[in-house]
Length: 152
Image 1 (cartoon, rainbow, N blue to C red):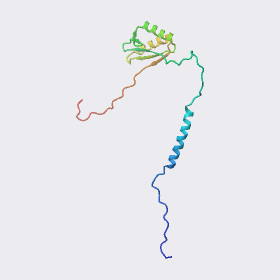
Image 2 (image 1 turned 180 degrees about the vertical axis):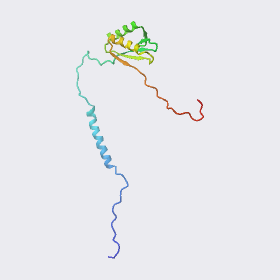
Image 3 (image 1 turned 45 degrees about the horizontal axis):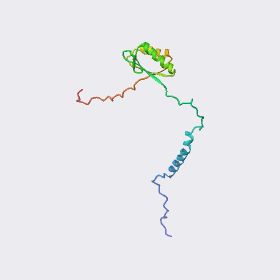
Image 4 (image 1 turned 135 degrees about the vertical axis):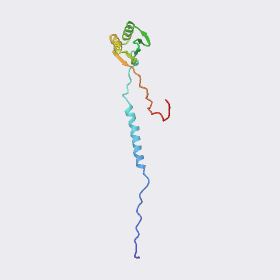
């Protein structure tokens, strides 16, 4: 044995790679859990219902369109009508189905009083479901200042 420096065994060096095995294991467990539980969430009570001719699928909701143009002229289902004709048409629609919805489209220049008159006619006829139809605002172009030297 000689005097001098003692040699040490080299320790482990730090790893520079990420170990993804635990991540993959966890993800596979989650996938299995989702595969097992997804059908349970989507299922409903299964019944064997009796058959009858009286049962029919629900009809889509019925509606009539009522338009008031900028001059105050009323249109019922895109047909111009006078005040008595409008009342008669609304009464016929209410008699056919009291749950009929009135889709009211009015020009923004129409006085509020005229819109209320038309709504009142619909309510007198017994049609209380009134929907107001509007357009989505147009996308505003980005306001960029004109380039220097550009003419308008």
